[in-house]
Length: 226
Length: 251
Length: 64
Image 1 (tube, chains in turn orange, brown, blue):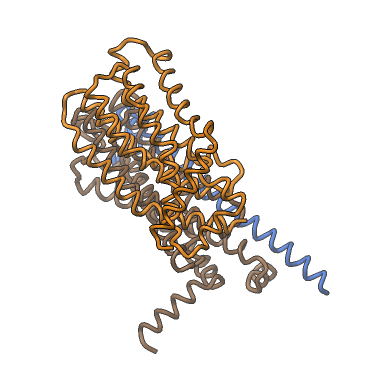
Image 2 (spheres, helix red, strand yellow):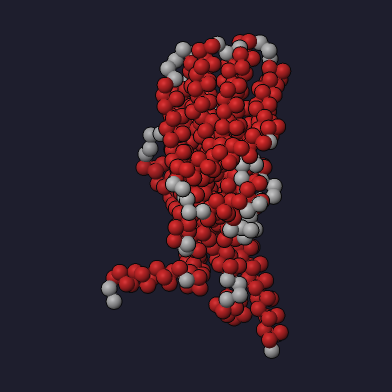
């Protein structure tokens, strides 16, 4: 088996397992929708207000749902020892980890991105703003998954990892949150938003090239813990 | 013996726990004295001799504790990151000990930079908190420190904790410039440019001397704390070894 | 400010041009936090030395 086949085998296996638990993969999306729809109730249903807070609300909600969806990323494989097998296999751990994160992104990140235009409508965003929102999430959410996976890999051996995970990961999300929501805000003000989108792409490239190596070495550390 | 050999010998001896413990113990009083002198020079110079700012009056004197704290908050994180890298690559235990010993004091400096910045902001901006670029970066840096400390204390096994926290410190160190840049950029969008009064005051010699001696004093204080903490860590790690036994029973 | 030790310059110094509360509380909290760091680090070291002394003394007694 060459690297490519190994990668594909891992990806297909993970996707198959993920689709078996359909309820679980829907939860982050539902969480996303519910959180966003709470804001009009909490602040104001006034379209002018919703237009100004909309981009930020959607981005923060996306960030939290990605974090939530990641919590069990390596959990079952860690518990039954599959992670050790993956790391001991002759293929680079980083490659297989990348497949895992990609699979996770397909089942939780992608639905999040796809449903975001609907939420944009709920918050009275104009069509051309929704387009920018969509693109910014498309570039930003994979970054969130990749960086979040580092935190998950570091905390997978711990019993109460949830709160610690958010403390580890959320500060690292700051740049993407700033550039992502700001691209949308700039679009709403008829200003150029290319710079922000380029920054998001640059961050995504850094995260996907360095991230898998960091995740696999973090998993090695977590496995040595048992 | 060539110079390189001597250097290696020195390096190995420094890395030997007993030797490090003793040298650190002998250095500590001198560092303490130097810290106190520099702190006195810095405070007297800053509070008495330095001129009051023409705009901010005597409130400006907070700079002599705020800026050194902010510098140290960054510096300590970098020390932690470099030592984490050394530990992860070459497995030198002493590096892990230094990184571990730096976390709390680094978080303290960050906290001080935040609090003094906020106290300074009250008379300058009329509010305790403003989302100024420097304060916001410091706040996020504090979160990074707290995450590091949290991860370290959550893992019982010391060696594993060191490696996991080391990875986190490196990831954080890569992110700090990006976070800082994005926050500064975000700040220039949302604030009028004139607000940032904490930045770039015109520096005179009578201000530079207290500022630099305070900065040096903070650095030496950090060294003091790291050495004390490292000695404790070494004792704990090597508590069964012969040199610790000799040390504690000879007292 | 420099020359007098009389009441007026001292008061003037303490008053900090009306910023007394801000300046002194800043310096105070810096001193407090740094002191606490030093206090807890040193206390931990002393306690550790005492504990290890007891440990090694007791193992000595067991051996003899």
